Image (cartoon, rainbow, N blue to C red; front, top):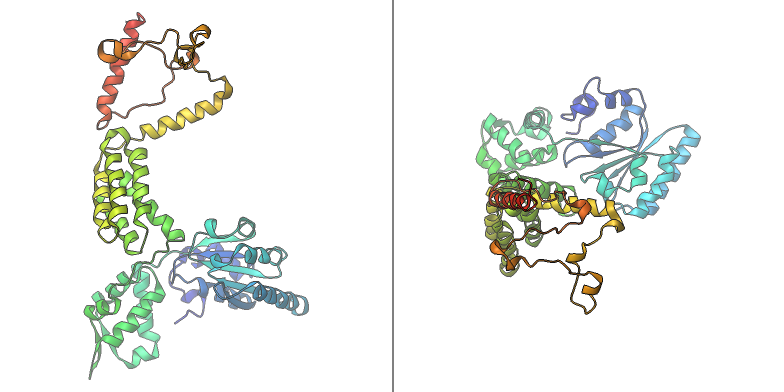
Length: 425
């Protein structure tokens, strides 16, 4: 079923469609080292093989899981000989290149830089995390996309049309069944073909052919785990989608991404910690109960464990997702840090606020003039707590949303009292 030419490839038209720069370079025999980054079944291996075929280059394939430095050295030596004696280029295709350690990746650098080999690395993980910077700088990265539903339907139709075994089975399959295969394939052409094959094997075989139904597809798929790699790119993508959904006040999306992480075996403590951070960063004083809920959930998850911890996480997630949002506290500490870095040693604590607990404090002015707020009506008295040169600085700016509406009113009242005390009416 593997395509025999660029025109037969289904999907990735943003790269190999007619007139696209990537395709033009292959057709002009201007190939270069690159990294193909994309999900399983998106065509990385096929594209690498066709690049070699179209340009008449030697094609050597290594799998990072089983190959070592010695294997890489051997290929480089062979490629150097082929280039010297026959003026023929060698494409070294490394599947799962992200699994090569730093020493193995380092070994590739000289050969890639001097053109001894044209490296094509295939990875399902973000190269920014998994490929060393020197190797990334010597290659170009191209993103392959998951196949769309229509593209997966085309994969199924082509298989039914040209696969000899499927033709002999005289498959009868409705559009709903094909669409179900596409839906369960998750953008993965290889998965679509595997589901098709298993569905045919489970289907009822009659005199007039094999009728494949949606029930056959459901039985073939059963409870296929969602593709998710805790150590890789999808880990970061999914937790990012989860946090952004909570921040964006979408409880449905938040619970969806939560379920995906938990079903894939993500550590529930890790999720609880992220919620705890979010409760301060994105909710803050708009709902002061947010951090209490998150902290209680984190402790409860630790005590209860899975699988029941998923209920606790779902409660905390839906509470935080529907809570009013404010990042005022987050911005306040960021502004304060920036101000301190800017001022450096120039920042001085006013004398009346300094520690006055030692004997000679008053003699040098420490604590002199400090007014204890609880001694005054309303437990407030006009007094400066910032250095004189920062008297008008604003670091915490309440959003006026949720509980911060009350905070904002109180701060405005205090400002009015300050103006009155200073005679600025």
